[in-house]
Length: 461
Image (cartoon, rainbow, N blue to C red; front, side, top):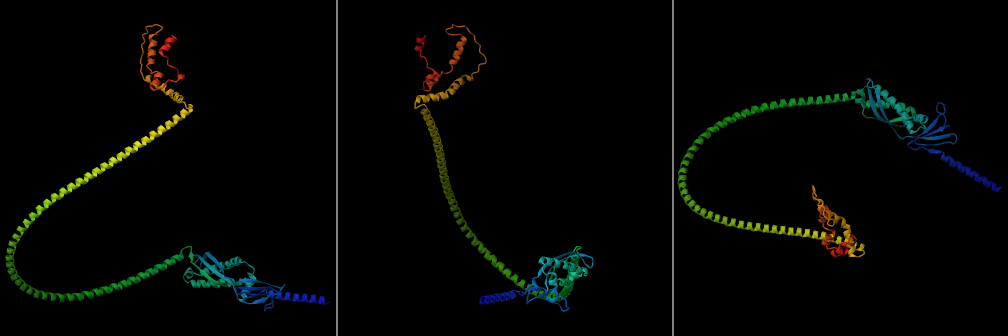
């Protein structure tokens, strides 16, 4: 019995704690940048109808399990680019209005209820698209009720009308308009551009008119000042001329007296000058005589110095030229000697290389002949035999025989006929091969035959 009671107490305790924890988790606090929307069974309104949802901003609420649920709506602003093109104005001129609208979920009690009913659960892209459709329609409506001049010049009025119309429609889905920014408005007929050019031209013309008026006033004032100046200058000039004339009379009287005194002084001075000139000429003649003597001595010394200096210069120039020629000859001889030495050294190296190669070749031939120098010579002769025979043939190759007339006297059989003796003598004019070997200081190889001696021939006979 005691054990069962203990188990019952533990179970009850767990249920109590689980219930408390569950109740705590169902208590939801709403952040400042969100709206807590509680939906389900949330009670009735003042008219006695059931509310679809309860919106809370900046507080908390207890969400009853099973009968209630909750969701958060973000208050983060949404920036929407709306490039309206071809909107028809009041003057039936189509214009382009590029703009950017910033919207967000409203926190007004009634508008929050609209947001909970119409955009709860929608994604941000879907909210932007829905808002863009509303903005396009209201923006076209505002443009259609205003002239282009009003839209272009009175931009505050245009923005106020757009904000008023757009926000009234956005509130129906629970949004509010935060900001409107319209950039550069253009029209397809360049009417706005023409208005700007007209305003600029008017401003330029007004400025030119103002400048011309100021220039006119300045010219008039300048002319009046020049007139007063000329009058005052003329009066001053007349007084100055009068004073000048009186001064000229006094000056003329003073000039006449000055000239008389100057003439008397000039006469005295001329006489004194002539006396002094005569004395000066006498002294000058004496000085010139002494100067001529000194000049003659100086010229003689100068000529002697020029002759000596020129002779010394020519002597030095000849010495320098001779030294330069000698140095050039030494350098040329040294260069030629170096060139001859280099040439002879190169030729000696070439001959030495050829002889070395020939000696190596001869050494290999002797090695091929088994070390027998005689057999090696025979190999060399056998290799050159064709050239030797060719040389013998070349001896009579170029003999031109246009015609041969043979008068055969039919000699004895022992001595042969005249024709055969002629041909034999012709062939004997070719140097015999044995003689060719003898001239070279060599013996004819035995496999080419041996020369018969005279006594051997007689013995055979």
